[in-house]
Length: 120
Image (cartoon, rainbow, N blue to C red; front, side, top):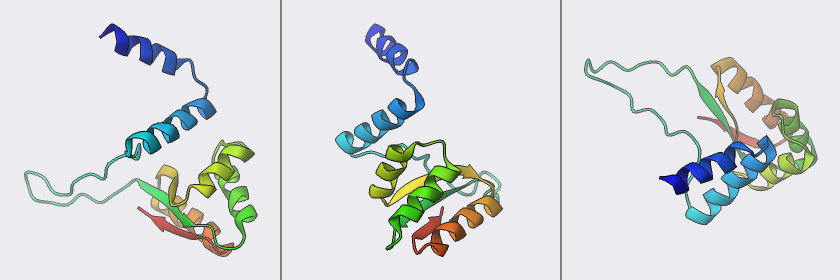
């Protein structure tokens, strides 16, 4: 348990860019995804709840990669290198926990510059 607490205390000291890089490295090394799993619809009553939170997945950049990077920087707090790395790693989730309207707007921005995006 002490080993885990030591790891957690070290992770807490990372800045956002370092944390994003750590997540990326762990995803690649262990073949996992840090994306939140989709909730299973249904329940005891059998009713399906309407989804209220959406993610935008950048599937491919198209031919205007620089414009796609600009959009990523505009909608996230990423710097130029981090935004470029995210775009280069497509397919990749760009932004999570969006309202449906925000997700559709972001998807439209990507499509206007020739990229392929998907709302999840």
